[in-house]
Length: 261
Image (cartoon, rainbow, N blue to C red; front, side, top):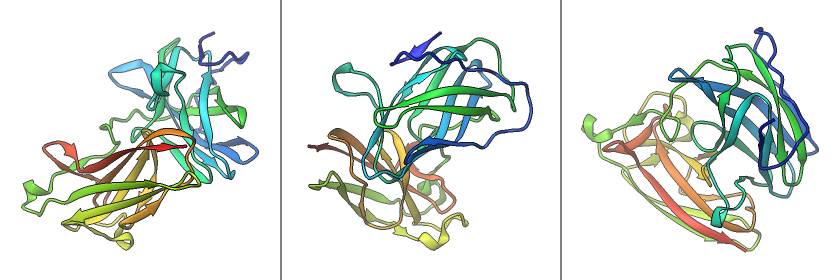
C-alpha cells in the first residue's frame, strides 16, 4: 500500500460505476465535502483529488497526510513546509478551503486501473488536529485549467484600460493578516458577480499558500487566523464572469510573504 506522509492501515476501494456522490464527512468542527477525482485525458492513470474543507473550529488545522490503495503514488500540489520538511496544506480557523485547480490539491499517480466517471473510491485524509477522516470521492468528468483554474482575459486586446494591483499586508497579534489593495483602473462590484463582463469591474480571488480561500469584494480584507510560520498570500483580479484579468498571459495579481509568530 502506498502511503503519503503518514502510515495508515486503510484500503481504498473502487466501486462499480453508478451515480455520482456528493458526500459530507467530518469529525467535530472539520468537514470534508464534494470530494472528487479528476483525471486528465492526456494521462488517464494520473489524477487529482479535489474537495472542499470547512473548518468551523476557532483554531487552524493542517492537512498533513493521505492514504489510499487507489494509486501507487500520491502527494500534495501546493505548499511545502520550509526546509523540505513534510508537506501540508493549511486550513485556517472558521474558513472554507477549496482544494482544486485554482490552488492546492492532491496528486494521485500510477493508478492501478483506469477509473471511469461515476466510479468511487475511499481515501483517508489526515489532519493535524482533527485526525483521520475517511472520504468517499466520486470520479468526475476530466477538466483542463490553467494555474489559477480560470480562463484569462486580456483587457488590452479589447481596447480596455488595464487594471493594476499593489498588495500590502500587515500581520495582526491574533494571527490574522490585514490586506490592503491599491488599485487603478479597477472597481469592485459585488452585485455583478456571475454577470456579464463590464470593463474594469469585478472581484478578487484570495490564495494562501496556494490554497484558494475565497473572494474579496473590497480594497481591505482581514484573513482568518493563520498557523505560526511563513505564508504566501496572493490576490488575483477577476472579471464578473470569473476570468482572471491578465497581461501577456500572466494574471494581474499581488503577492506578499508574511510571518506569523
